[in-house]
Structures are given as C-alpha cells and as structure tokens.
Image 1: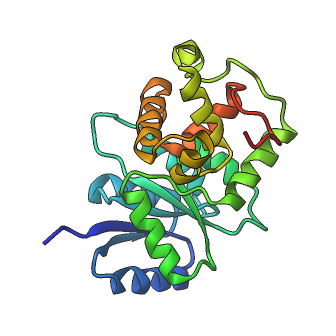
Image 2: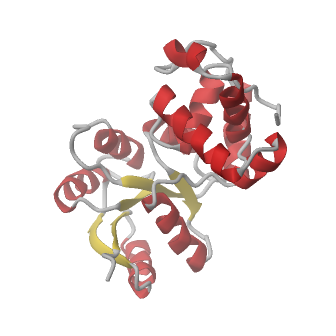
Image 3: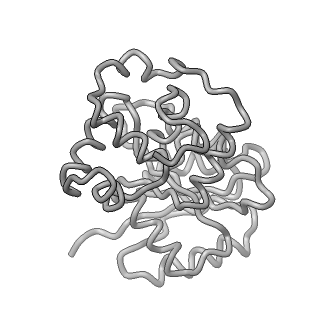
Length: 228
C-alpha cells in the first residue's frame, strides 16, 4: 500500500483544528501527524514530524503563519521541507500576497467544501501549486497597486536565458491558466507545456508554480491587467 500523505494542522482555534482533523482522517490516503496552536509550535513540530503538508492559518498568536512559513522554507535546503497550504478568509485577511511571497504553495478558504480541501492537500503534496482564478485576480490586483520593478528578484540574472516560448508560457502561468488552457492558447501539447514549466522553475530558481506567478510580475515579464 502507498503511504498516506501526512498533514500537520496549525490553527489557534481548537474547534477548527478538531474539524480539520476529522475531515483529513476520514480520507484513506491522508493522515494527521500533529497539531499546533501557534507559529512557533508549527515550526517546531514540522521539523520533528516532517509532514508532507502543513495546513497553515495566517493569524495566530506568538508567531503568525507568515513568519512560520518563512522559517520552515528558508531553512536547510538539504533537509526535507513541507508544502504549505494556507487556510484563510480572503475578505478579512490582507496577507495572502505576503504568504505567497513567503513560499506558500496554495490557499484555501476556511469555508471550502470538504472534498475540495482534501483535493487541495493532495495537489500541494504532489508538488503542484494551488492558484484558483480568484487568488490569481487578487495577486494581479496587488501588483497593479504597486509599481513593477523590472529586474528585481533572484531570477533577474537569468531572464536573458529564457526562450521566447518560455516567456510566453510564463505570461500564461501568471494569468492563472492551467496547463491545458496554456496548451490551447499556444497551440502546443500539454506535455510540451509541462516541459516548459519545468524549465522555468529550474531557470528562475522557483519552488513551484505559485512562485513563478510572483516572479513573472516582479521581473516585468507579465503586466497587471494583461491576460496574455
């Protein structure tokens, strides 16, 4: 049998943690390995338990989820780090963009239907990022409010190494399009799109698709309000 996807739940509300635990453990392919009620506990337990995914609340006492995410993902790159799935409420929380910058791989609302939350955990555990159209619109709005600084970020030095097609794919990724949608827009196969995305990740030093979105705007490859 395949080992279950291990999950650490970080939320300051005991009732929320209990609800997530019941939901996650209901799925045969998922298993909860621990709980944390603040960011400090989340970092400590994640380093000991080494879960595949951390369900991370943003607003927690002692240390919030943003700082906890940064600490977990900025550590020793030779060791295994978890994927961070942020659980938030967009209408009340202005930290979504900051969480993405910190290295989170996906976002879900606290009122997300159960099956969608479980699928989100699986998607993130598989190494993909979870950027829904609503999240992408929020990111684009954030960039529209702030001036773009071409050449900023760690990937600036390798922009010249991108092929024209890779730039095209990067713009499409920044627009929140799936591989299938990019395939249709650029008239290439899905397999080809996957290859280009993999090369972009390697060349730009990005952890996942979510970071590609951030880099595409920081480097001026994509522009707010432009759909490609």
